[in-house]
Length: 552
Image (tube, rainbow, N blue to C red; front, side, top):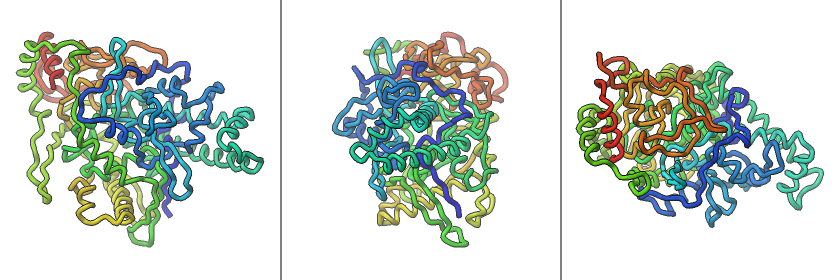
């Protein structure tokens, strides 16, 4: 029998002993706060934000009562206190009718249908909501890449739970807060057993998530999402399927994602629903796939909420790219921008101005993902190569060995079909929830070139976040920063990026480590090969292009 248990949310992401970056509460950078937040016009109002920040995908981190009662590992202070969670990059969200527990943005409540227990887990807003700061102002970028260190956060959650279990005084306070009037010898014993079971699962899945000491630490704003999801989904079926997670990528911005025919940095997934199912699996759901017979049909039990995944996708379809806020960052130099526009048309538009596909069988036209082969773009190959070369043994399902893309297509389709049948969806409803696209996966040795609208708000750059600013992206690779710090939210409107100076609790990205290369996508004289995509630019031309990119 194949049982896949993606229990507590963290377990898909937790690096445990393989992570060298578990942040002590005293070390973290100052986190983003909601006081005096400026919301840019992106087509959303309060209702869209409420849904995106608070509607659950069905993920499971901890029972809500545990999360609210949990103390920090090194003190009696509550873990969920805003001055603590913001140190991991989470955004404070003051209490409201939709958030009475004052949970951070992207941490959502969900009720287990079988037990009635209320859990908390991650939703879309966790990894796709950004808040930057400039001269004391806080600017919210909805759908932007989050600046969180989710691995360190989940490591700290389970570290605190483990310390609570092992410390009598902490356990007594925890039990009083969780059990309240039901506290007694038997209920405390049952609580301990539940904690031990959850921690045991966390330790097992932490090893699978990181898959060894050679994993590349992701840090703030990054995750080897495909690698970790593959380990958790396939590792329990066959330990030989585990692979080291050495290809962290930035969380992509979302405001144009629903318009493309293929998504992900490696352009690997077509259908919105199964893409979102895979994402939810990767951030921690309660899911089991069990073969029903000797054939390839499986029975699926999962906490995933496909109705909510569809609702969340509908909000993203409304989202627009943020425009450069001149009242905050200064006016755009229109003369420079006009010169930059000519340079953009000559050197950038062919990859970053996608055409529409012909109408599909449902009459829908999408923007065609422009894929840049690895030997042309020259950027770090690990993410694309790992997914392309990875295989999985699905012999327990009678399917034998297959490529990672094919295996994930099978698993997500089985879950989708089961959920759709449970909801009683009509054929037309199924098509609509699928975005009128089939569930097709692929594994090209290439990366997707995105539309550059709102690109100013998405630093650092390249798929792995290895270049800190737009200005540096236009430099030859040998002149780019080889080491810099991630974790700051302070914006640099001149170079167009986030500040990269050393900061307490920040993460130092070192570009000579596997998965972290900042090579490729460079303008340099010579043959157009091995990452050289255009001629060398003068210093004035670089600044002209930066100025134009602010206008998009």
